[in-house]
Length: 631
Image (cartoon, rainbow, N blue to C red; front, side, top):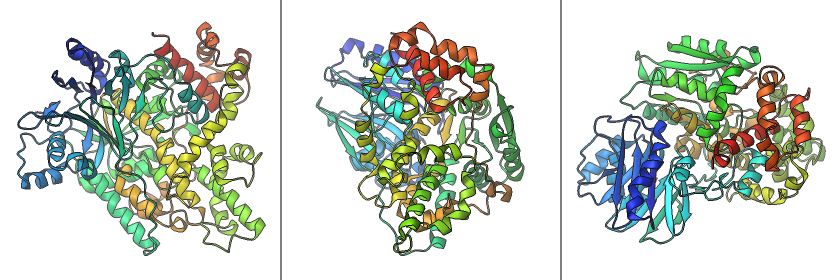
């Protein structure tokens, strides 16, 4: 993984290299192993690269060209099937000078043009400057693992791996986006191509961007989730297919020319990745990395992580985090994020990534398992309401229901700790339109609105936000409710998690790989009949059956799903009370006009638990301080 940047268009020739260098300097953490700049002043195209050397460390420098230097690429990520593609391209007559996956992109573009992206299995964001055709071709991987931000200003186009690079190069102003802020207040992430900066967009996953001859960018979709349901095969067939694809995904992501390890929480997903990696690596050493807090068992999964580590014979390393770590690092974390964070989990992930970076250069993780394989409690909440409605109306047995009230009962103990969610969810709108009901589960604006100043709250158009939500939730082809939920979460919530994954790892020059997000697994799960993949409301039904011989039984039987909780409620009442009060009580915060000062003070001093609305307020204020006030 690396940092990429580029300029195309009306940039003064004398400022090309200076601006590209300024962009690279802000992303030094993404590539400590080298840097390069390519400028074609006649076509006003410049590419820049900060390198984290993972594959072919000796000869993979970028920007990289083909033999006659007519095509250059700057690339961030990893093409996992690069060896197979290189063999195919050599058979077509292409000559390789390196053993890097970057050169595969150059020759693949020569051979197949813009269609080359369909042949890549990997995480990637790249830009190709084709001087023969006067074309700039950019692409982002199918799932959105690697970032790609861009701006259009005065007829010029600029892109980078991080927004701060676009600010440093003078390609974007430090003005907040009203729509981005509105979306963040609702979901704690932005939808579609939106960011929190007025001038900055992000290229959507599975899309390409093409500029020819200084014209306007043309954005095209080359991949999407297709819910073509496979009615021919049974559950056992799908389980076998999941096992095979999962094993192949991990196998491909073990390719590296540098030391490699894995995140390990003690949950199903990371435990399965570690267990499978051990099977594939044989006796080769593996290091695993775990984080926790000392504020009680609710914040400490190390007993489970140690069990998995012992079973898989890994070298186990852990770090315990404190309120002092939070106060010392949260502003730096938001700086690395470029935008307010989706949840407090960004804090421990940042520090566990630091631990990993001190030992390896590549780390595998279990990110994406909950979205791909239906693993969140809110999915069960959504279907429990449908089962109640079906039982009351006596319609549950008239159709091919995913679950009925009788069959979903054994899964309900999963909701033991979700009583507040259920109370809030069922307080209004029961049995309403499915889109409205899932929007209610994802909507954090009700809590945030109480903190807002009246004048600012009056500018928030909630129906516009719902329309944006609905356009994704009701994506063509996703007919079944569980598929609509899966589609929305992959295209939105998962993006916020991948944003965290990228920034917290790259802050420490660490490459993070996520085998559960191999696009082939996502395509398979999308094709599984809903009645199989969410059978009787069982979370992760397919995945559990697929990994039962990989993960220890005690991990398989866990019912206390945690998800790396942070003891902010405890800290807010003790060690962090002054920190949060000072941050949200500052003169700058008062003058922004976003929050109601008295309500914020009451929320901070309240005996009520620290909630996501207060977290959002803290992130928004820190973000303003890091980026807007810095102007």
